[in-house]
Image 1 (cartoon, rainbow, N blue to C red):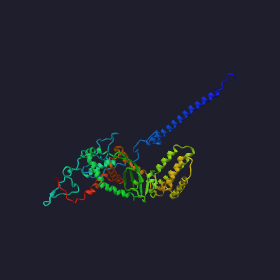
Image 2: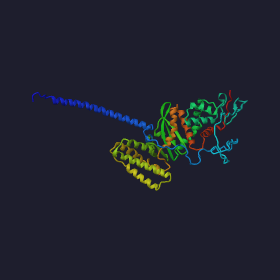
Image 3: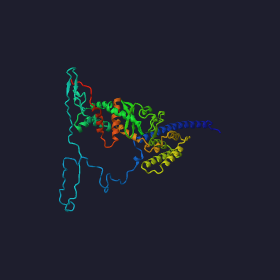
Image 4: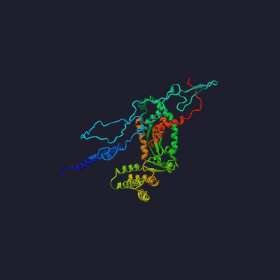
Length: 480
């Protein structure tokens, strides 16, 4: 046809190809942005979860008609606050509190005697006065060789003369170490606290030097004795957290038993550090999380119970990104472990009927669900391989075969919480000696705390005096 441009279709095709290339580049950029935003969203979800936000508890609406706190009317006498033990043995007679009106303030009626109520007020002394004991230490000198001999007393150190002649007693040191290592108060605040509550002047350096000295002496000896006793415990609950020694990365490990609690600070957390307290031939049960150090070949002979809360957290991470049939594997596994945990609670409460038969049924059900096979979803396959391996080793439902074992290592985590708060204030230890002192004193304090109605200060004071009461046998030179 005349006047028709034969190259127009080719130019149109070329324009469409160029436009297609531009759109393809934009699509690739959009996909990269989507992937980047998805990763950022995932990181923010993890941060919110770690911060305790975004949970069901955070989204829960407040009640429309909440109940007021405290004891409700008609619940009877409030029994929680008891009278002091020495209230009746006080030398001072009770203060009389008479009724000053002769008629009822409501209706003007006559008032008759009904009863006398006892009330007490426990308070601190108005001015704390330190108890000072003075010792007249005799010094004699041999007329033949000139050797000086000092008098000996359990409360007086052999070198307590000259500049260090005036010292604070073991109870003051025990109180300071209890407040520091047991309650997490920084050591720089201890002098002000002791001065305010006891009237005793002591320096921060003196308390630090005493702690280091005790950690190499009586506290260190007691610490080593408890370390050797961990392996004989029927069950050990262990966990670890980060620590710092002179700014360098370290690990604080805890081993909690029914009798005591042992801490250990090491630069690394491997099976070698675990086997310092839990040998490879240990006959007890170790309750742990999913740390790699506990799954080492050297610890295959040790019975272990993996924390169900950590397994549940891993399953929740997988289920959060799944939909449809991909959720069935994780949901069923989660339901089996939930049912097993409830059965354990019922057994402890004495409500479980046919307990042994239920345990065998759950073992068969979990073994069938974790049988070796190939799953289409990679995340579910990792769950199957990881938890299935632990089940094959008898580390998932061990708490059902021995109900005295707890299904989680929450005890170990609770033991670490005071140390975590101390770490936020002190950022760890300045040196190896400080780390050993922290482990030793914290071990003693938390072990004593297991015993109810037992004073930590009294326990530390008795420990400090356990060696000092032995009178020295060597002669000591006199001052000068």
